[in-house]
Amino acid sequence: MSDLIVVAFPGEDTADQVLNKLQALQKEHLIDLEDACVVVRDRNGKVHVKQAVNLIGLEAASGGAFGALWGTLIGLLFLNPLAGLLTGAAFGAGAGALSGMLSDYGIDDDFIRSLGETLEPGTSALFILVRRVTLDKVLPELRPFGGKMIPTSLSTEQEARLRRALEDVAVAHTP
Image 1 (spheres, rainbow, N blue to C red):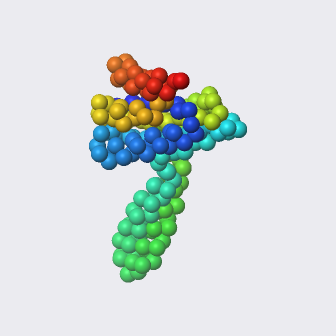
Image 2: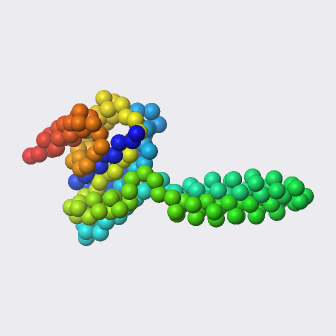
């Protein structure tokens, strides 16, 4: 089961920096992200949502490849594999893009937008859905960014450790 963690940051670009750090840590197998999203509320109060996974493009690419394979096989039956390849790829890409628009998994978009509206202007938040994390290795990497936890589905002990790590930075930066 995945855990939802939302952390608000004082700057507009801090959540992007943290997501980049988490993606680097994922390559080191210290964290396994299922989904991630950055929300920025600019100085004018407008909310911008940046999804980490583009479902439409991903589904279109996989649908195109699947359609090309089947189109080629069917084209071989009718002795015209090139026409089958092109037709199958076009049909598969269209079907995949439609599937990507209709599918929605991970973090609920309405929840992201509603929480984004509560952010102060000039701030950002990072929404992550985590399958697995090695907290004792990841927390020291996140300390320099600070931040304030919002809602979470972590266990009480894990949430307390994360809050302490984030508060240590907030206290260190207070004049």
